[in-house]
Image (cartoon, each protein chain N blue to C red):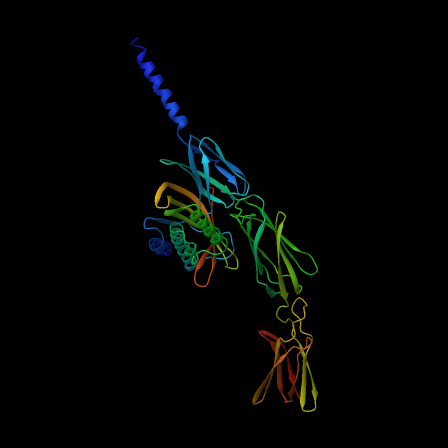
Length: 289
Length: 165
């Protein structure tokens, strides 16, 4: 009889602890969910309590009956981040963590292409950077392939595929040989974003003038001014004619009109006439009466 | 050799000025994915402004005042945090966030210089107060992805998001 007593006491203690445990409130939240997914927080115990989901991204509050599951409908919790799940009763509090992950489907691209205007034929002259977001404006941090495509008005498009790292990806593209408006597109899955990059002619190339005498004047005119890819340099571009002669120098700046710069300068025997546009030098003519 | 030390010292001073008194700061070497080099001055400014944003974040959430975010947060980050503050005010609570340690690394500097992405393995305490009664206090470790964009005279936080490690 005496030897059974410790077993009895032990058994009673264990039973009491089990009852106490069964009645003590607790919560069980999923370790993680995707943004916008429905989820359930399981509670134990009895009585009423308030359930909070708390994080920098969102705060939700729900009155719950302990022992029942608190269900949150799809779209309730949608901002990615780490959340504290807090169950508050009159005299005690239970808490747990819940991670909300960005949704896996991209819905929005933040695409910045620079510059919006540049000369033709520049190696890696155009850059594009993207950040990939889900429908709730969460940055999607799992690696995703981003397709970049730069399409000139005619000719072959340049294509690159780059994987995102922590939601970001970038690429560099060459400006093409043809002037015009290029379409720069970034695409992730079904989502795309387009920017227009204007490619303008580069510096004049092979600048050449000719001269002929008209009475006491020398008529100077360039050939049609083009860049090294054959694109016409835009009207308004300044061409400088310089005449050096004994005892003096004359300089005239002339804007291109219809692709040509023309000017009349006084004739000086033994003069040397040169032409330039910006830093680009053209040919030189020596003039004898 | 001296340069990184000076940078870290300067950042430590910034940390002591702007972050919580006890917060420690570690800056990992940059792991840049972009083509653009990041100057030391730019890096220091971005980190200084990011740490300053934690100060605004703490104050705004403690006092339930979204306008305190305006100096340091912009766009999506500002909108989401402000909405959260309104939600916690409606729920009758406020929260005290106390950052204890930051482990930062610059991850991306966009080619045109208009955004910097950094990661921050941050340890912080969060205290939930129902009116002024402390409901719970928990230690949290999280990896934050932060995107900063330049404003007139500072970098502002545009994306502020914890992700699983």
